[in-house]
Length: 201
Image (cartoon, rainbow, N blue to C red; front, side, top):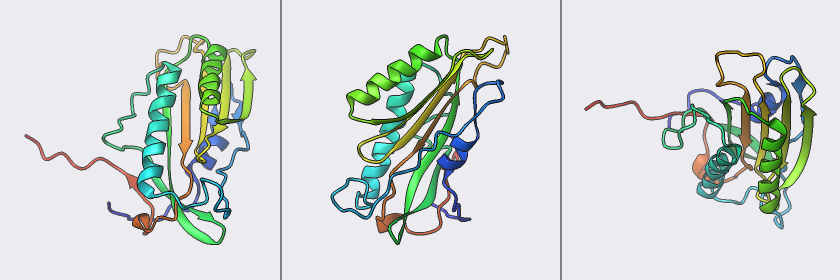
């Protein structure tokens, strides 16, 4: 993995600060931050192996997409396109975490979509952080944010396309940020993970 330039700001912090519901003009800032701690009794104290954190992160993306029932066309687990590796800290130690923001299709029923995701997360003992209801907007929308028992933060927002816009691929958003790992195998300057260049036939 090449690492050309540092990315020192949490991608999810930026994503959540800029989350937009369709074209309603509302900006949502759930106030969710990745819960890292120096307490070794907690699973997100930085001691998880990078491979475990990465698999958990990818599984969370796949599971969340499946629960939404919507298409997120840019997501391809095999290519890793869009996955960012950014710096983070646990106490005074510097580590790395994975993050991504994906855009997907409109939801026919945002409230039902969020309730389904919420129920799934609760069944896995996730902590629901915030739920924002804008179903009274011209393009009704909902947003939910939660934290997994391992410290992964997910924000899911979805909007019903009532405007008749032809482009129906950018009305939902999933932002995922893993827990911070101090595993030295990821040491170096964080970078965007991308698929290897095609070698052709």
